[in-house]
Image (cartoon, rainbow, N blue to C red):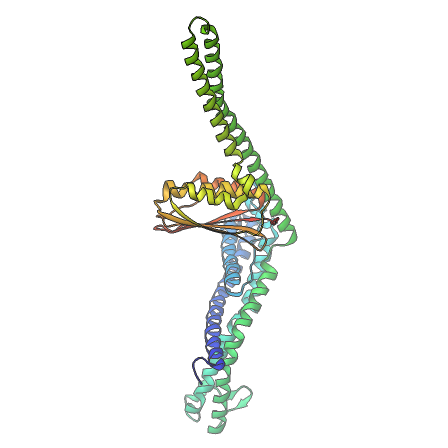
Length: 426
């Protein structure tokens, strides 16, 4: 059997995938045992609310319970491809007192479902995750029987193996053959049982329709407030730019023209000089008005779309930016505008703070989303907590259900992903 034969490939795949799933199942079994202890702690804290002690015990106990169930959600998504969203209701404002906080935690059905999951996982769940490991241990037991049958050591191995009495050498070798068959069975079943465990977790740990709608309303309310605030700030910026820029030059132009009219007959040369000065003021006012309009809606974005607009940003940036854009059509103008200014903000941050020399932009449409990946070779360390620009991107994308993901370890590189749900028009 050659190393490239189908049988060899299947064997390697079985050993790799089955062995990995078996180890992961063992890790989840350890989590399940921890969950059983956590269930006792949560129930104890809840029962002590009446005497006051539980008011201080319940919140940290619930948070610890959420931490465990979040680990299960993460493992289901990473190991079995079963994504499970967090179902918890947002904590209302002013719920800082122990009584109000406990009232909120007890009123959130997701916490009750988490507590139920602790029981289910520490019973049914642990059977699913430990079965492959138990089969392997039982297989080793069968393999050892021919070497210890008839000896004193055989007592702890037992005299039965899979409903077969083992009392002599032939039956011991038969038990060894059965034990050997346990290994492929364990490796084959481990990935299936791991996925079954993930689906069981999704049944209890996914958000209910009520929680999903509540979170959706909360998100829309917050994004609406952010959009209104952003719009008000933008109007104030436009008013300030008009007042401090174009309006100043227009007022100066009017005063200069008045002065020119007064000296036109008596001093024609001075009037001509004043007219030239007024002309310069009008040119500056016009340029500032163009810059202001470009800041509201760049002409290249309106005329040629997001693809050419991003290419223009990359060309105008001092960094060496490589662009790869694959868009079979154009999204809506609202999506294009949000994407354009988000990319502009990311590139400005890279230019000012990253110390990078080069970067790359990849734009494509995937699964109903406009996806923009931006990377640079700078020093890293970018996050939304340390920069108002990145927080501004989050607020800009929120009304469109878009989001930004930042991966920027210290030392770099920095990778920023912008995703906005949208459809494309040819």
